[in-house]
Length: 312
Image (cartoon, rainbow, N blue to C red; front, side, top):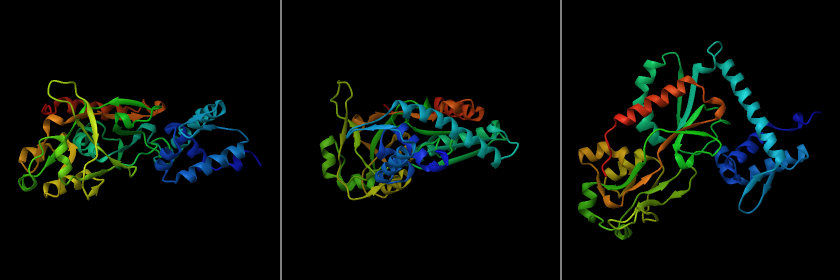
């Protein structure tokens, strides 16, 4: 029996994901496993190979020379498998006949949806699949050609292309809520308000990040824990709750442009709004020649250039 016969592909996938994220916890979240299951998979793989692949400490995970060499070869192998499965799924269509991307909800609303009509016109023969989810994933391991995330959430081993400029994050509330509870004028005033809590895709809570600098000083972002009993992990539901007067919300200003224009939401603490990371399209270096992906990036960038500037 060969070494390969004794090893499960699932364990190899766990190893590659740990290599990309440099974290057992992050890899486990991406793969839908517990950290303990990821650890067992790595122990099993190393035992069957008879080689140490990762050096672990309480603070970091680093590959050994053997681990680096194996990961490089496995990337090639999984890419080949992905190509073979794509050919079976669409015989004769060619590698560029299908484009699969994974995006989070705000990017789907702000970038993908507006780009679809022009993309369909320019690439009428391309089968485009857009999967919308906010959890962090390994796009290569799960068979995607590309993903869209904020720049600081893009894995280091990926090629990233900025699709937008910095994104302005604001606090907003409905006129009804502000009439009942009063408008916060300072960051400390948030302590006496009901605030809609954010839940990230990895099920961790997110602190509101706002500019705490005084007028005339350089912007300094400050993470703030705000009070509130309602937690939501979906932007559309958060906007609906804010419009209904449930509480203040922390949102992308561009995401609520229509609500601000119609008056159903008002930005408060505008001087403390903070710039966040731009949207980025990211992909594996071995898939960067996909012509339909380049076309989609060009369309999104062109539409962003034509979009109205956000208020200062």
